[in-house]
Length: 358
Image 1: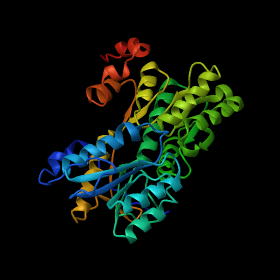
Image 2 (image 1 turned 90 degrees about the horizontal axis):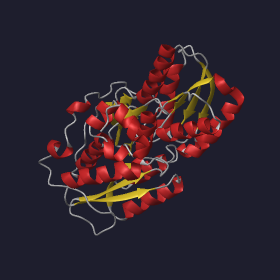
Image 3 (image 1 turned 30 degrees about the vertical axis):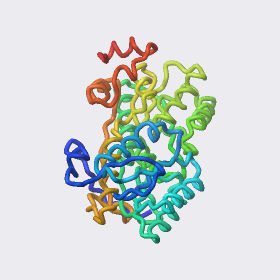
Image 4 (image 1 turned 180 degrees about the vertical axis):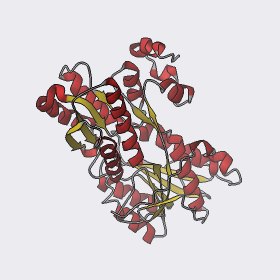
């Protein structure tokens, strides 16, 4: 693995809305498979349906951002549903349809090197999104700082355990072994917990980020370690939710602290209910807007400048925020990420009121 340059973009507040930052561009995005548009075609290729963010946030936000930047551009959107061969076929089909830029969140970051090389050989720019590709240098990479995410959620959990005077050990539930971003997150989780004074009881990489597989593995660890488990450092909200389901099914009370990442609605509800300890707020609009801005620039024949270099690829990384019950109102609700109406259904209404969420 090549060494990454460590300079990280931290000024999220300074990241202007796409419409303002490129007001001079004559462009915004639309559909999926219509006739060629004057502004060009951009393929937006997402990896799976296990994480709800891609359908609910990334795709609509990216399409809207392109639409604001380039009204005559067309977005070709596809989700590979955890199938690398399907994603390769979707990339090939998008290029055949005339896409000149691929925004690629890879199912299998090793296999996706072939997508990058094939596209570039045909004069198509590739922007890797969220998950870096190590074995082929893309034209640009846009993401939150994945290693920083893993370290932040682990350190947050460890700090709470120490404050509570807890004794016992931790489970690490990582993401997909075919995802380089999961590897970075896990590296951060290990860095944030290895010298904590709490023993790492066991560690796991969850195939395809599948919550059911995380649940099954954690269930096995409960059988082996029982009450020794005082914390589960899970790489995202899906694996965190699967871990919590296993703990609840086994009748473990009180629940150990469990981390997450992505700030999915279900995770926000679990934090409000006291079932999940933390998640990561990384407003998808930030990376979706940045990817749209970069994609439109490539369509115009421009070469966006690197903010940082990662795996020999010009990159821009953003720093997210850890969310717990202590700051959930400020970050999630006052920050406009979700509304109380979206989250505080009848099952969570009382707990929302207790946290001042309304």
